[in-house]
Amino acid sequence: MSQAVHVHREKLTEAKLVDAAMPTLAEGAVRLKVESFAVTANNVTYAVAGDRFGYWNFFPAEGEFGIVPMWGHAVVESSNNADFAVGERAYGYLPMGTHLDVIPGKVTAHGFMDMAEHRQPMSPIYNQYSRLAADPEHDAARESERMIFGPLFKTGFLIENFMRRENWFGAEAVVLTSASSKTAMGLASVTKDRSPNTRRIGLTSAGNVAFVKDAGLYDEVVAYDDVESLAQVPSVTVDFAGNGGLLRQLHKHFGDNLKYSCLVGATHIDERGGALAEPEPEPMAGPAPVLFFAPDHAVALFKDLGHEEAGKQLAASWHQFMTDVGDTVEVDIRSGIDAAREAFVTMLSGKVDPAQGIVIHP
Image (cartoon, rainbow, N blue to C red; front, side):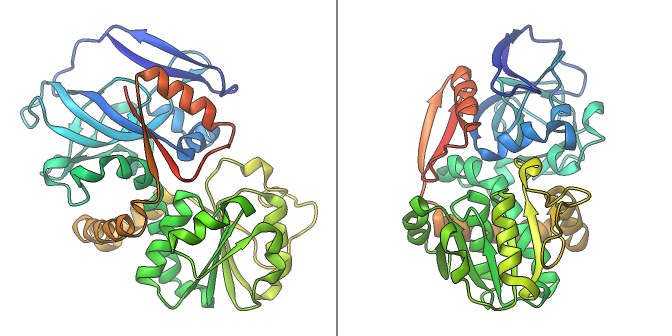
């Protein structure tokens, strides 16, 4: 018997536990038992943008319900594939549930792709799984941190890689909204390491200023109410907050000094105050904001560098990031699949303590 949390695609707070009989394992398939996954704001993005970006299609459910994807660890429970033995562990995209059947293809010592037919139209980035025994990113002592930070960190890594290839559009500083968010912290860490000449400015709520300063990733930390104090130098903005009024204020403040406006995440796309609307109620000063879709940039990175070199660079930056912030978050481990449902519904409220990371052991 397997269990999964089914979430109403239009009413996200309506979430229920569903039991299902285990199907016969297909020829060539592997059954993964989910060991652990993190519940973060990233999962809320998957649900809110599920129809727009196809996130509901990875783990289908019935009717108006869907299964929200999670990032986590799993172990081979049974196998009809000669390349995989019972007990092997993997890391990747998992359902908010207890089991997942995959059809491994493109198998290497480091990982494999799930070749299930229904997953092929989506970005291959989400269909890749790491085999932990030969995974350069794996650290047995940091498995919780990888689930909490890993996917968000990679988005930050990809943003820095994109900006650096574009010579930061001639900017001297990068302004990050929602600076306490895990993705922003990932971008700040990678920028500090790989683009040290770019000044890092974090914007956050007044209540989070101390936490963000203590992280030590930013050259300057500014509360949202003090945007007007930002120095007038050529800058790029990376908006994680999704607050249309704040974005408009930043565009107005920097004017011609704003060289690029990057929007990240899809949680509040419809609340960006016209930033993506056509036509805009009133055009913002400076460049038009551009939505950053991480999977496309990931494909480009692997195409440019090759999987091995890209993997090495990602792993090196990941380990540096763990050195930077690995101890800033308290891991809150919760047991049982219903704990995942409860954590996800709570996460929808947006009241997330940046110093806490929730890990579920279903």
